[in-house]
Image 1 (cartoon, rainbow, N blue to C red):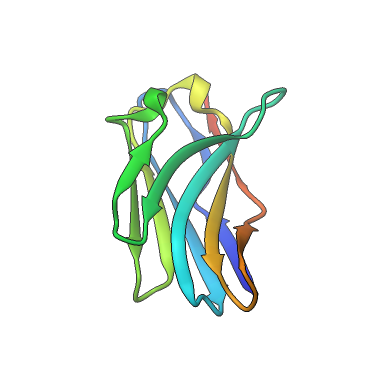
Image 2: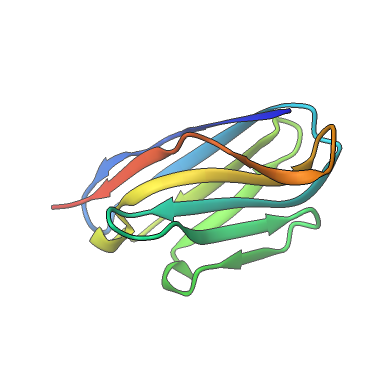
Length: 119
């Protein structure tokens, strides 16, 4: 099994920056994609950023040029650097691993970290 713990959320003014971290523990046999999702109040959860096993990245259109996903394989961590934050970025941000542990590939989720962008 895989456990994920996010950190780094908080409150920031528009234009500010935050860096989210996700620490993974457990047994990971194969990596497919490592992802950050977010869910704002009253809205569905949406995929914000993806990094593949080959370190290719993909972003939600609204965050392109402002957010950067990265990984540290040695530390079993992924990060989301968020710059030029806007009020519409306010949401709970979730770390997601689509990986293979014991058994077939499946999704693993963290509990989320709140990001609030407000003046």
